[in-house]
Amino acid sequence: MKAFVGVDMGGTNLRAGIVDIERGIVLTSNMVPTLAREGPVAVMARMADLIKAAIVSCGLGIEEIGGVGIGVPGVLDLERGLTLFLPNLPGTWSNIPLSATVSGKTNLPVFLLNDARSITYGEWRFGAGRGVDTMACFTIGTGIGGGLVINGKLHLGIGGTGGELGHQTIDFNGPVCGCGNRGCLEAFASGPAIAGMGIKAVIQGMTTSIGKMVDYDLNKITPEVIFEAARQGDPIAKDIYEQAGSYIGVAVANVLVSVGPRKVVIGGGVAAAGDLLLEPIRRTARERVRIIPADQTEIVQAGLGLNAGLLGAAMWAANKLDRV
Ligand SMILES: [Zn+2]
Image (tube, rainbow, N blue to C red; front, side, top):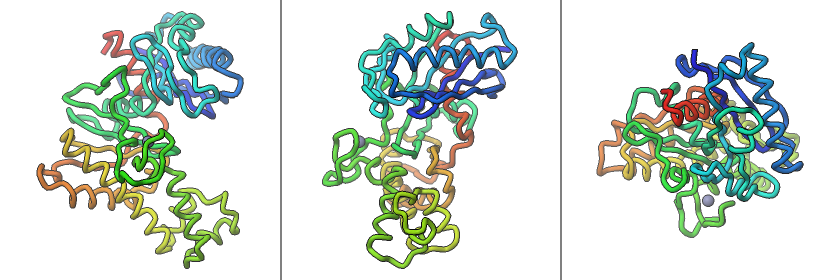
């Protein structure tokens, strides 16, 4: 068995999984809180301890592990193993030697990859994107991440920054996005943007069950609450997903004409809404793409859930070491 460690570095939790890269399965996984406010030195020490604990709890010795891949939420220098900008972590981790530090503490080779690219890679090798040579992946959650596989290879671009599909402009007069640009997809269809549409509907006094479902505590309105309302037939809630899906569909259309993927995989927490979100995505993408045969592109829900990032990061490390 070839075992690698995949790490999912989140703003709230750190997860480490032992991955059998031949079968594409997570054998065991461990999780601890990130406690990001303690800063990079403490977080990296906790991550190294978590990796060692994960190896022990899987009943393996360190010599049986090929290496470690870390899915990181932000901008990286892949060649030098540095974090450059992690927008959701305190201090934003400018020029932190994450790879060398964790490698030094674990005695294992460590490779970094953006978290959405890790999910993309995992879904391509083992999930909903399996078997095609070109695919795009959108991860719809607190933000919107993305990744591309082109001609059988994960597309990296400059230092691994290529594939930020959530930060394509879909309305050049649109609202300011967290990245500083105006009108990014993320500003229209991320989890908080969808929640915002629900809050607006309740404040405007529209006829919807969303307000009642949270006892009119607007802070409790989430994409999940709106999904539940839509599932129960609430027309405003259905409209909100229709809107979000249309925005994502425009972005998917842009990717179809620029990349020509055989599959587009939609993942992340918001994608749990399934066809409620996927149908308007498919419809919008097909309406807008006329120049290439868009009906040959399958637009599907991601298949691996939370394990996609662990599998992808572990596979990435194996790939960098020429083990796959
Ligand atoms: Zn943006």
